Image (cartoon, rainbow, N blue to C red; front, top):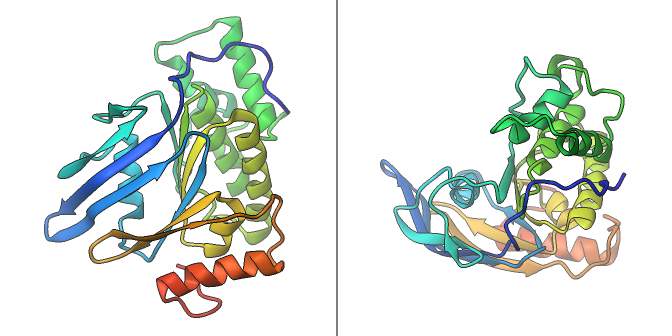
Amino acid sequence: MALSDTSPPERTAGGEIEIRNVSKAYESTQALAGVSVSVAEGEFCCVVGPSGCGKTTLLRTIAGLETPDSGSVVINEEPVTDPGLDRGMVFQEYALFPWRTVRGNVRFGLDRPACDCPDCEARVRDLIDLVGLDGFEGAYPKELSGGMKQRVGIARALAVDPAILLMDEPFASVDARTRDRLHGELLDIWARTAQTVVFVTHDIDEAVTLADRVVVMDADPGTVQSTVSIDLERPRERTAHGFVDHVARIRDELGSPNGTNY
């Protein structure tokens, strides 16, 4: 399911992220307080932490959807001031257009401005195949399962070939079996595209399954408590000693009882 040789929109080179002492408040709530994190080009980085620790705010700040009160986000040595085609975002709520088919939703990013060139059509076909939805091009969101909707969201985010893929708890609403399958598909896509991924999750097992490195956040206010490198070969077996040890370490960092995720 590799992408063909059709040329995607020109990608901004690299995907190195520097979050420098970022703070953000909403009225009396301090969502982020002096957060500093670096994400290397091509890294798969997961962010975990309790509710209210600012995970989604941090992701939206990287996306350019939120402006920090102080500090800065820098991508490839350029400050982030607004959204850009170098960043694709996948939301928890699917956020698909109900009046567009699978093909139409995936095309959305390529339709600004509208483009009917053969290369764009071929890229849409390749992306639909890449996420395993070949044969569903003409289906509408109401005809799709939750996992299929999230595949459409991933394909749409990939359409403009962003250097960075930002994912906000994208698999939280699907069942465990579908989530496990989507994990494998996402890692396959990441291996093929070499994009930088920042993935927010409440699920510690999910973070250890996916990440090169896990950023552990604390709440009230939102701060970075620690970072944990996941030095395990993929695919990862959740019952293996190394996997269990990494999960236990992150739970310990969060003060979470065994068996509890955030």
